[in-house]
Length: 276
Image (cartoon, rainbow, N blue to C red):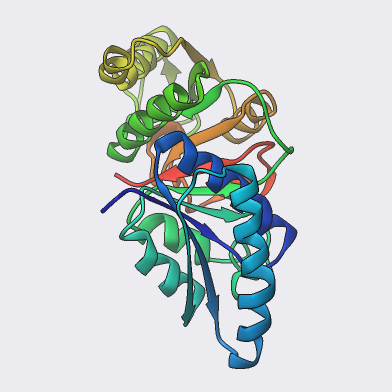
């Protein structure tokens, strides 16, 4: 039953902010909220249940009194617990920084593995508090990008927000036809042809969801620039960034390299990663 939003909680301020966002997301969807904690030391269990988790539940109830709220406390490694819980969730929400069971969430491969192998979209709460602006969709034309587009349009509709579909391209890692000899030091790139191709990719990526969600105001934005810096700049004016778990073209290595690390560490608003 995918009618549950999960909030991963460890008592850190970041995870409590995730509870607030998860409560909002559950309320928008008419879904249930489940507060999840993974523990490895039994000595920590009682104060967590009666202190932090009880407080998190009260916090969520105060924010959205109509919510049905449940708590899950599981023994095990954070990634394993969250992956298991995400099987029954429409969305999993975690803080950008944690402690205890979530201490390494963004300090290594944990969040990458959860994004790649979890069972639903993963929202990482970070950046400025209560951000305003459009939902920002990072378009890359990949299968995961198509799933991200659907999520972004649904999210914009739920929030009553406009959507900016941004596709960033450049010639540095572009597998394109060239005019001229094969010598890499003496090639001529047909920039106009590339721009038209990327414009077509952008329009094609949003077309089905634009038709399905006519109530969402959409801005198509095509930029020839550095991908990481352009996305981070755009996040400063967005309330949410949505990206596919894996990309190609301008988003090569999404969630595997520098672009994903930049989003997850430096975006100025929450980031949602969607798997194909």
